[in-house]
Length: 222
Image (cartoon, rainbow, N blue to C red; front, side, top):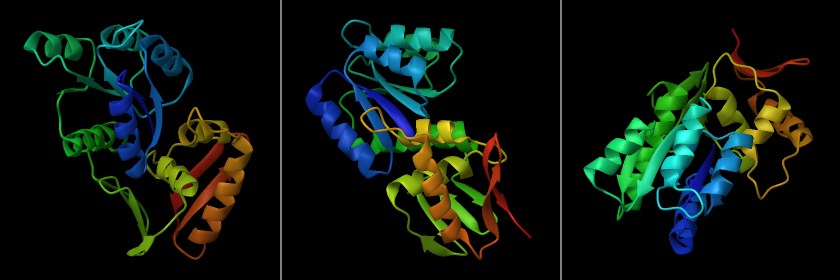
């Protein structure tokens, strides 16, 4: 899954980025509010982590404009401002959660997972498609009860398909969810990952179906 982290402290931003990537997320990291606003207008994220004290445009204003555009992605406000008034303001502007600094990394990771479960999987820890099971807590797949080990890009493609049951995603949509800002987002590469995934799912009771001109759909078979 692709998320946006906006934090103006370079050292903290770097450590959080490394930790979140190690947890299997695609992370775009920015350091000011104007850049964050532009990214949120043009890119496709499952979650945004916003610091409040950002240069050029503070996190509250980024959040206000995001909700004014009626974008519904989950937002976690991350800030040194722990006063009740600031928490209330952030939540009233449309934040889904609020974490004050200093914090434990394990708590941030737990809150991120909880927000992703709520926004993508209706609060459920696991999503199933026939014998294929995805556990969001540790971001692992099992197929017929056995671990399904996948390279990061194939994992990201399958993750996006299984967490959106019944919804078709085309190459461009998948590319926008799989590749970060610092990566070459190639819709054509998605075809390669889909082909590889089909081979790995072959013989099981789950498949990726192509609907020409519409996209791909993950479905269980009899």
